[in-house]
Image 1 (cartoon, rainbow, N blue to C red):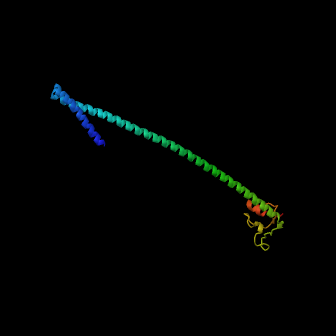
Image 2: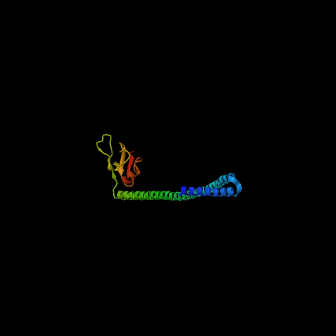
Image 3: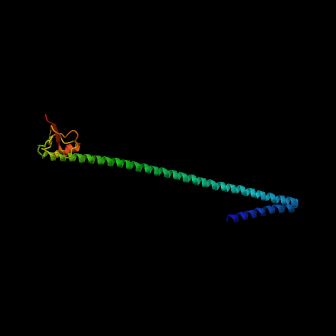
Length: 190
């Protein structure tokens, strides 16, 4: 279609230039004036055509640039929305992680309190009983007493006595969980 339009425009420009050239030649200008009018008319039509085409191309190019600018603006707005949503999601996840951590921390404290209460209630039902004493010969006792079974400290050696009672303190090296469960104490003999 574009080629047909170009051919039709060129034919129109030629016809206009020929009409002007024939008018000058027939009205006494001679054949030289007619050829000059033909070339001048074609040049005038071609220059007008070039100016109009350049103007149309500039408008088309300007529309394209405007569309690209608008698309960039839309893209920027969408990116800002996505950034805002991602920030909200990150904040929500952080808050949720903190909340979960606090909940787990609270649950651990509740479980520790429960274990401590169960241990103290369990120990209250046991009477204080002396534990066997280790000797240098090893004749009296061959294994650690039950109160030392889960302790982190070694079994008492010669010269110390050990009693299992709920009110006594655990050995200095025992873990707190062992102290709470067993309530063992070691005393040096005088």
